[in-house]
Length: 281
Ligand SMILES: N[C@@H](CCC(=O)N[C@@H](CS)C(=O)NCC(=O)O)C(=O)O
Image (tube, rainbow, N blue to C red; front, side, top):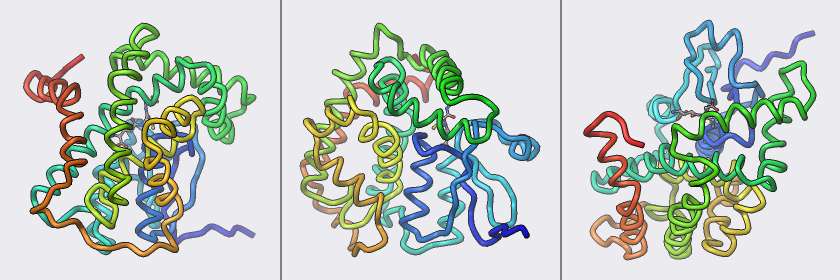
């Protein structure tokens, strides 16, 4: 007898994947039923529907595939409007998109770099990732680990992440970021108040899959911004929590200003170049 569950979204991804966890964090908060379907990054069904790659792909209860976390969340917001994850205030909404972009396009770089250029992280986060991949591949976990490590490392230099630059990413980008984010989250449970936004889920994805998961990163976060660990824990188990209102947009906490100032140092020049030139190193 087949017991196919038809009323759930199927998240085709892995637990130690940045964008998979962005989606699962969002789905859990919204109370949208989902199951994880571990896959190695591609599957015949997903490819047949045009999936271009970029984990995860999500299958709707009707069986259709969709991808790209930002587009998927916008789609789901229309189907499941409450509780909304886009702040109503236009300035807060703009900042929300800004932080989401920084999480997706900028902090992703030190996430993959710290996992694969530091042996301690590769041995834990990398191995856990490989274990999910091996579910759908006829290979040993060690073989999956070696293959996914080689694949991700080959994708790093075009992102500006190499063996020579990874320590700079840690010292100049990742750890300063965790300090300002931690200081803000020590004052407010979420970026824009008493409830999480799209940007909180983008950050949660990287934090749950990498920065609070991989041992070396976890120690840095505990030292630099312990409130980031608490933010991750809250979004891991949102079901029994009470959520409140967005902050008053007229009074911006100075800790949020500091978060934006930190992004102005390295992310803003980079994203400005990318927007104007269509490409940036
Ligand atoms: N824009 C996509 C990005 C998806 C993405 O880049 N996923 C990562 C893994 S978490 C990936 O597949 N990286 C490329 C690779 O590993 O080949 C989204 O928001 O879902």
